[in-house]
Amino acid sequence: MDVMLLVGAGQIGLAIARRMGTGMKIIVGDYISANAQTTATILNTAGFDATPIEMDLSSRSSIIAMIHEGEKHGKIKMLVNAAGVSPSQASIEQILKVDLYGTAVLLEEVGKVIAPGGVGVTISSQSGFRMPALTAEQDELLAMTPTEELLKIDILQPQNVQDTLHAYQLAKRCNEKRVMTQAVEWGKRNARLNAIAPGIIVTPLALDEFNGPRGDFYKNMFAKCPAGRPGTADEIANVAELLMSEKGAFITGSTFLADGGATASYFYGELRPERR
Image 1 (cartoon, rainbow, N blue to C red):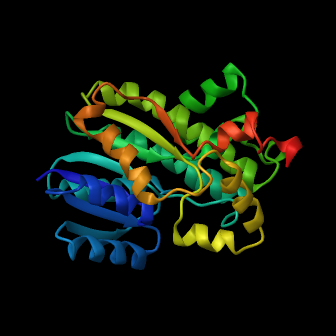
Image 2: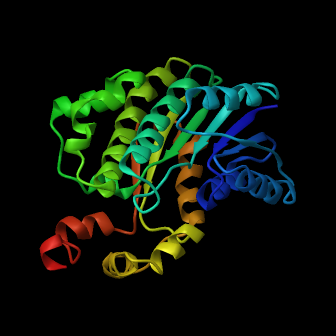
């Protein structure tokens, strides 16, 4: 049986698993075991074959353990990485350890075992597009630095990271660069890897944000983006379906921005900082 590794038991990962996981063994990993169990139960009661495990994206040994669990059932054919922490949830150090380092390690480790014809998608964020451009040298460091050295590079040191939002932006920029680098490695195994950078997607977490201290910021963002609304997890799954199916066979090493035009408006429309 072919195996899907679903990292992160939230709404986006669940939507993608429902779209792509038919006939596969789905290993659902989440930092909170109860969340993994809940998502696995939803999948199993809908006719899928899912097994939950507790998994820490910031730990290489935990990532490897999840891979080994998947290999008990068959070949690893799909990776869906929808795990991470947000600027309002975590400290600078946690964001860099989980979203930046953890994602880099996951893509690297799965890339060592992904089956021929396999595909992966990792969920990044529109935030990676919002920060000022980095130098070519900085981008190369994010893309190419060995994973165990990543958190030591200069731009990720505490004195160079302004706040948790900046840390999150750096992490998501790094995700895009690591996808490019790892797509080259995955290609040697006849496998593909891409990223999706969603905008504001309605999930339980997003609803908490809408009603929290930054709620007005988020509501203004989706109100003034060209789409005029937030997105849904199923709309992100639509993009994943393209990238993970044969229709996307020529697409690898790319990041697809799916944000209702919010980034376009941020640079060239009503969401430009000086107009807010």
